[in-house]
Length: 111
Image (cartoon, rainbow, N blue to C red; front, side, top):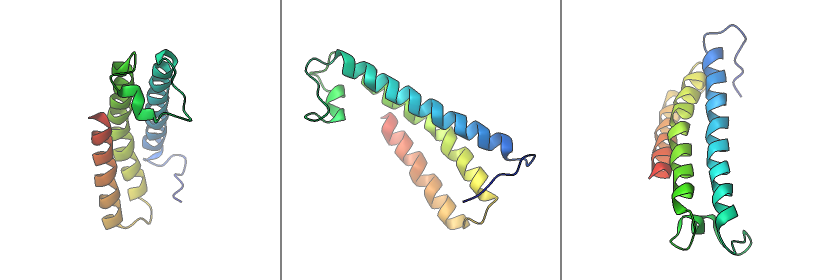
């Protein structure tokens, strides 16, 4: 675990990254729950979440927009996280690997 000391140059970046992570999660989850509320007969025990974006849903565009928005907002979060972890003891190779796959996942989530 890497702790960012108060007053270090990355303190502001760490806070910014945390705020972006929270915004990304809240936006995605809020729009998913909004879609759940208008889906007739949707039950989490029976249907998968991906049903919310299907043609049977009343508002698939809201579900899709939630995933796109969460993915787009998460990209700066992961780049900020990589910068904050860069000052720690994380190996450069592992950091590049994690950055590549996290950004790839965000782009896949957006599409």
